[in-house]
Length: 413
Image (cartoon, rainbow, N blue to C red; front, side, top):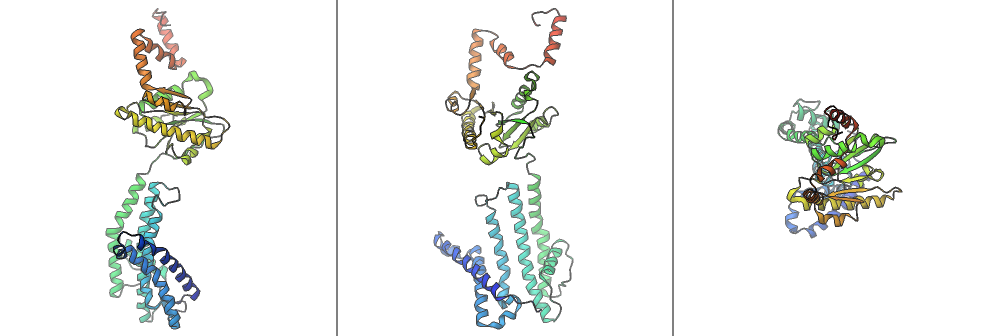
């Protein structure tokens, strides 16, 4: 009971901070489209109460010094303190808005923090009000004064189990608080907890960064790839005919979209589980390109989706923007060894833009139509070119040669 008051310097500090909050908030009424409507809003009312209550407390203490010996040195103004804690909720939630958040948070982490903030600040405001009422209740009965920690434990236990702690709900107010908190625990709290659990379950299992091991090289593949495209790339890249150059090389696949189930199973295949990694991120973000160490990659491949169809122009436009971002990132990194960029586009006119951004550009439509034209003039030319550009390991060619020799088809051997 001897520690009920608050030092006067603490009251002055709180009043000064409240005055700064009020001065910062007042210009909003001038900028609001409807100042009167904004003044009547809940956010405006609780902000005015939060900023004016400490100032009124200091003024009242100066006029009546005996009030400093009251609970929290605030007298009857103490009943406005729960509003101050309630005002903490919109302030923290606005700090977690994506455009105002200076910290690097994933959407899942940000939403979980928002849900936790809502639950914690609500329980805290109810605890403050309960602590004030229980203090006056025990003061009238000349019984032991309960601390804030005991009031918080009382609220938490009542919200979860409905049981009582050292604070006994023997008045209409404490019994109403118990019922209200139990109502929150039954109807209001479960949806928030369910939301947090669903966000946690929906989190991406794919990493957002890649760090190669010592003396390990890596190449970067950017694009939303289908199973067949990625399978052919990995089969060709890790073919035995390439020798030992690709033995200690990791293929890092980067995309803004999570891979399909088929692509995920391919990446977890024993043949590629330690040689191919998927990174979920934006290739136009410098920070995420730095997280995958794009400046130290042996090569960067920009692959297009062959199933784009009518969205071929949109697909190529995205690849041009990615190539611009990657080229600018490499130039800003000031690396000593140039990193070659190999691009694949869908439309012929895109090659005019890519020639200035990539070392080598392949247009799928030009290649397809060119092969069709040559095949008309030279039958079998497309098959010949396919065989010349496809790597076939010796474990496959040797059995074919032996089979051809046994069949006396020397022309196959």
